Length: 287
Ligand SMILES: Nc1nc2c(c(=O)[nH]1)N[C@H]1C(S)=C(S)[C@@H](COP(=O)(O)O)O[C@H]1N2
Ligand SMILES: [Mo]
Image (cartoon, rainbow, N blue to C red; front, side):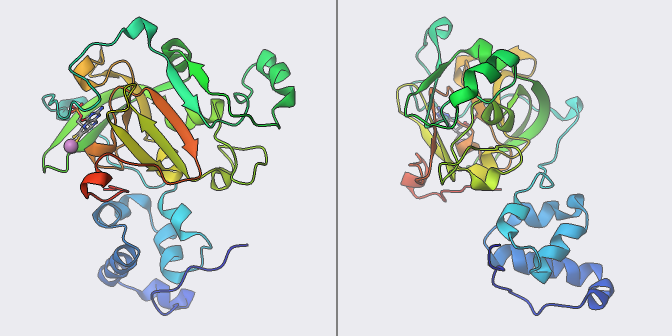
């Protein structure tokens, strides 16, 4: 059992809570959100999430507010096809203006728990010794990634420069990728990505093949159900300016975290370096 988070408001009785008006409720939610530095996104999106979890947050009854705030109930808005805007290219760090040989591209996965999670009988046989972890990098082809269950979603990408675009993306949920190629648990015990993400190491680092652009992500945001590894944008394979062959789409973060042309993914217990954080922007860059 972890300790209760420090309470920022006097706890109210359940009877009191029922009397709290919508407005004071919203204010209280804002107070909690800004106190813990989560900001605008939580505040403006909360109504979508239904009532129970903010009540828990305000009352401080939930033992893990952090996890709750980033639970799958926190969804970025999705849009219909009619709302898709013109494409816009921004940022070419990581040598995006120069071609790479897409047919030779492989994703390097570093820091994964020894073996891919079982999803077939042959994998099951393979993973008999999966309790010992090793430091070997995995090399994963685009085909292997595309063979995972994929989804399409239309979401908004906000650039820190102040503009945004709505695009349709196709890819695999990072959480499904992580279930197949699991991060290790912080204490070395066997990971259970979907049921016990809180035991995993805390961060994911991603960088371009040349190392010229790199982002650090907290594990909660990486495992958010709208965080995708994408290979298609608006019904077409990614162009190289948009990050072919594989990019991150993470609508709970600003554009800077949506790294294009991923070369390496690393699971790590240490807070990863981040290109724009080094330029003075907030490391989390959450919306
Ligand atoms: N490799 C790489 N990825 C990147 C960038 C970059 O410079 N290099 N810029 C980021 C920024 S600031 C934004 S706003 C988005 C823009 O994505 P888009 O060009 O597909 O619209 O990509 C992000 N990913
Ligand atoms: Mo951006």
